[in-house]
Image 1 (cartoon, one colour):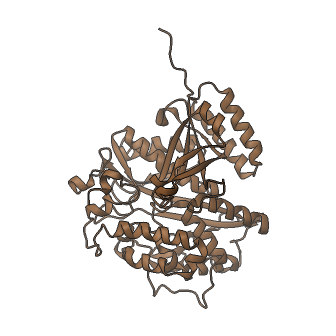
Image 2 (image 1 turned 135 degrees about the horizontal axis):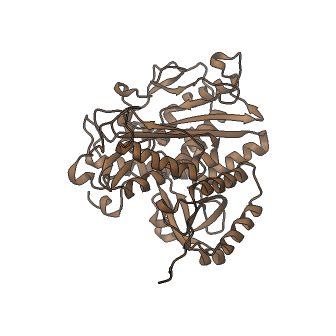
Amino acid sequence: MPELRDFLQIPYDELEERNLAAKQQRLDRVPMDVIREERMKYLTDEKRIKAVTVCFTDLEGRLHMLDYDKKFLLNSVDNLTFDGSSIRGFSQQVESDLRLGIDWSAFYWLPADIFGPGKVLVFGEVQERDGSPYLADMRARLKQYAKEQFDKNGYTFNAANEIEGFLFKGTHAEQNYYLNGKFDFITTSGYYHSLPGDPVRDFIDRSAEAQRAMGFANEKDHPEVAPAQFEMNYSYSEIGVASDQVQLYKLLCRQVAFQTGITASFLPKPITGVNGSGMHTNMSVSKKNNLFWDEKGQENLSSFGWDYIKRILNHALDICLILNSSVNSYRRLDPHYEAPNQIKASPIDRGSMVRIPIGNSRSMRVEVRSIAPDANPYLAIYTLFKTGLEGKLPKKMPTGDEILPDNIYDAIDAFSGSAYIKELLGAEVQQRFTSLKTNQADRCPRKLGTLIKPSEVQFHHEVYNQFLWSQF
């Protein structure tokens, strides 16, 4: 019998080559109309593609995906719409329709064994009915800010995120947590010493191969300190690429885990008594050369870099909710587990909110350690860069006497009452984010206590669904 389906399946080495080339076009700022024409011609000519997955991210940071039939997409690319009222933090029911533009520069060829054959992926841009950028689409805001700073000052913003996660037995372990009240590690192996063939090592190997194929430019990967905890590091990139890669990293990890009957979780503190997961965010600003490097500066960091740190620390309480946006994330800010909750900077003290890693003229950077892996990467990275460059300088360097909030209510109060946040995001987005976080927090214990509570998992913004939300 003849083969009925002939869908696109590309070997990993060719995938890596294609995705790296597309990434380079983006870094080189090839005009969008040139890339659009090239991609649409490719989709037209490549008969083995059946669908295009278009992604966008809501205000809280949850990734959403729509699959468009390829022929329909090509014929309707300038008139794609979706129901924004179904997305938390987006439009109301009475004004539900939103447009979806295509960012053709953020185009990815996918490993067919993980995402299925015959599909490619592209990031979308949420738009108002008139085609203007939607105010709650933080990806568009980040992209616009990076462009403005490049055009005005010649700045290129670079970021690399170190994203930690856990592996638990069973699929949908987070959604089922409210039924059994526990997570089960897939192994008790830990930092650096998982043997070949260990479930964590097998998961990391397969996920890292997929990352590499998608053009991440891998550096190193390893099990983390807690049992069944992992981290896979990749090279820094311009912030638009870097932020997309956070979403792709979590997507492919979840998919690889699902295919092997387990769950990849990015809850900041899913298990009582062991280290939580962070998303340490390394940042630098370049203008031909790295502006954070000064061979004679304190810790080899330039005065430009120190001012960048000072502004972030000065606004630490204002922006805490953005970097730690779930009830569960405040469990991670516990000093007994290397918590980065002290509002200060240090080259060595891992309790500091900001660390200055060892660097050189190319790699000198600033690392914000207090950010959780469930933060909206576009909102968080936009906030950090804009604050570092344009925030208010304090009269003196914070010393760490003040610490970050230990509960979400204090963070909500600081965020909602902040004149700086109103200026940074606008009053409408400030109010929407406050409302989303308050609604989530009000379904959870005001006092965290010692043990993880089912509600903080069940109503987490990356976990909840319509059914779970109704179980209250």
